[in-house]
Image (tube, rainbow over all chains, first blue to last red; front, side, top):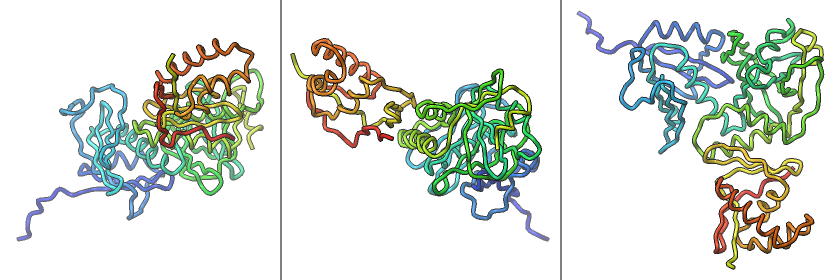
Amino acid sequence: MPELAADVERLSLVIEIGGMPVRVNTTDPDFLAMLEARYSGFLGTSEGAEVEFDVDLIQPGFVQPGFADPGADVRVTHRRGWWSLERGDFRAQWEPAARRGWIRQSANPYSIDAVLRIVHTLVLARQGGFLLHSASAIRNGRAFLFAGVSGAGKTTISRLAPPDATLLTDEISYVRKQDAGYVAFGTPFTGELAKLGENVSAPVAALYLLAQGPENRIDPVAPGEAARSVLANLLFFAEDEQLVQAAFHSAFEFVSRVPVSRLTFVPDARVWELIR
Amino acid sequence: MSKLFVARNPRVAARCLDGEMMIMSGRDSTLFTLNRTATILWQAADGATPLDEIVQDRICPQFDVEPAEALRDAESLARELASHEILEISEEPIPQRNAPAGESR
């Protein structure tokens, strides 16, 4: 008679965004299937994950002692080699040196999505890159970023993209420093368009600050305004002085290497005639 | 009247871009853009030079202003910047610990 297996089967998948593989382990096949659907196009096969998370699923609405209040802002702190990530709907810890961590959340795709965004911002900040509130797309082998506050037109310009443009994201751009320039990667982080970006990358050719107006035009932006705009649109959560300083300097490095302009546009497809 | 010494807080990040000084608090990520007077004060705030000397040597030559009035304004400005933890102020010289002067471009 074979021995009874006492262990629960561990299931896992690798989510690879921006070239960084993150392995997620769970014991729940339904949750795994949810993640496979959510991150379709961003699933990797890498054995050597940069980060590995064990997900501990709890019942929806069940708030464990130590959890932040539901609805509270995200809190990201660093202590003794561990990052702690907390929001009302999840709690996570990650030890970069060991490349391991855990996430406690209910079986929903939004909590782990937030954890992934935070982890990527932390990793990128040390490498001179960042996540930016902006749409982005590739055209003619070059990536263009479109930043703006909510309502400025990120979703609109994404929706108007012509067939020869490849949408990387309509909401959060993934920017990695590479050699003397920057490369933008597709992300599964969606906005109103609710359409995953393509998992491809290209050198960043320009950042446009979006404004809607009566005509399509591109105007120069003073360096100071460019830097302030990048800083205002950076996704950054960590309460950590060193990383804040790193992110600050990354924004200035970016505007010193990438042209930043204001793109005023009428919300129709002709605006893409200016973006080549 | 006792002298006042000012020093850049080493816990902030600073950059000067086209003459515009921007400073970010490492504590809460608040971004400050300094005006011309505040930029001069920030750049001269080495912890060793008294504020009245900074006003006399660096600020007065740049602006058409009475030295006494300029010193009053500079003290007020220094205290405001200190309230945001951008500058440190003291009646004694302040040892500097790799404080950022703000890399210029």
